[in-house]
Length: 372
Image 1 (cartoon, rainbow, N blue to C red):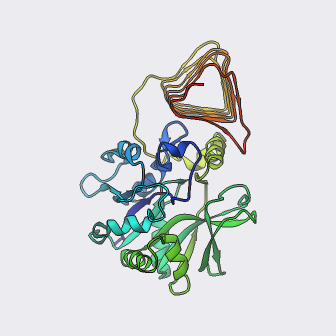
Image 2 (cartoon, rainbow, N blue to C red; image 1 turned 30 degrees about the vertical axis):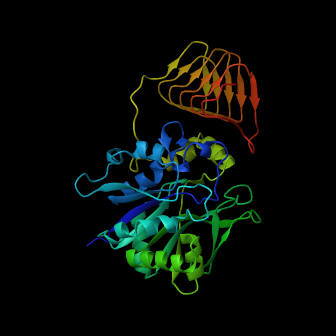
C-alpha cells in the first residue's frame, strides 16, 4: 500500500519583504509570467504528486490568495477525497516577531492532528520549481530519517538567494546545520523551505518550538534538532527560483523567456494549474513589433516589446517601447513612452513620463494604480 502524505503550503517569513509588490499582496499571489500566481506551483506539484489534502497557511493580506484559490477545483484535486483548506493566523501584523509559521501551526494544531495521512510535505508559496513529492516521500521513508529537507545546489549564491538558508551536510547527506546565505560564497546548497516528515514528528517539533521560544520558526527548531534527530537532505534537479526580493522576482521572470529553461519547468506530463480567465485573444496592430516575450491574452499591442513579460489586458500604445520589463495586468502605456528594466504593477497608467529606466540589478518599480 502506497504511503500517503498531506500537503502544507507555507507563507514567507516576516523578515522577507519584496519592495513595492509586497505592499499589496503576499508573495504567493504575485503574478508570474503573466498568467500564473506563484502559489500555483506548490499546489500543482502536490496535485500532480497525488496529494489531495492540502492546507494553505495565510499570515497576512490573505484576500488575493483566497480569491485565487477559491474552491480549489481548478487544481485537479480528487473531488471526493480531496480538499484545499485555507488556514489563518490570528496575528496578521506583517512586522510582528510573533507572527511565525509555528504560531500559525499552533493555532491550527487540532486540524493537523485530525489529518488521516501518516506524513506531511511542507512547501513554500514563494518559490518556483517542479518536484514529484512522491520521490521525496519514498526516499524519506526508505532512509528511516526523522526529517528530509529538499535543497538545490547553486553557483550564484553571491548574487541571488540572499534571504534563503543553506544546508551544511556530511558525505552521507546528513544535515549538520542550517545557516542564512550571506552571499559569501558562490556555491551553496540552498534549502528550498520544503520538508518531509511524519505527522507525529511535525507535531512534536511544533510543541518543542513553542516551549523553547514564542518566536521560533520551523527552520529554527529543525536547526536546533540537527544534533538529536536524523535529518537528511534530498537534492532537487531542474529549474528553481526563490522570489524573496524584487531583484530575484525580476530575474526569475525574465530568465524564463529562455525556451530551454521554460521547457524544463513547463512539461505536458506535469501541468501547472491556475485559475483561468476568459478574455479575447491579444490584438496586434500593424505598428506593433514583439520579440522574445510572453504576452498574455486580452492585450492591445501597437508599440514594440522586446524580452518582456506582459500581463492580461495590457495596452501598449503606438510608439511605446517596452524592453526587459514586466508589465502587469490592466496597465496602460501611452504613446511614445520608453520603459526599460522595470516592473509596472497592475492598473498603472504611464502617460506623461516618457522615459523610465532601471538596471538589471535594480529594476524600477511603478506602483499599483499609479499614474505617471
